[in-house]
Length: 148
Image (cartoon, rainbow, N blue to C red; front, top):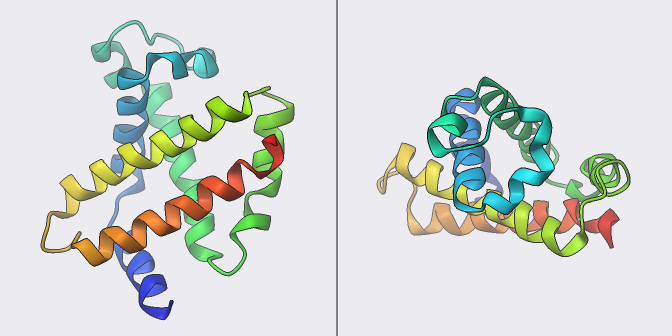
């Protein structure tokens, strides 16, 4: 457990929120266009080029990474760390629980891809990826808690 926590924190310290978040969110919106319906406020999402160049997508990607940072800083209590955010997405945005789980989980997948590309195999080793994947799984579970 201690090694997993150290790996998560160590990976996080090497990431640029301003770079990784926008890349991961853009990939999500391009690969899974159905997720765009939850992001109408972001403006032009009409094409991959529009998404990649959209400053609101980049800004929201940074916001998502800021939320993930809270999880990294609160590894002992991730569930309550995301309780309010989970409730807001469920109650205010009316995100369907099944789509929510797929969407948040898919963002985690694209985030993992971006992290792997950025850090490379010498840093993002199999053990590091395992720790990272466990962290994201716990975040997804906590985030989806209120949508049940």
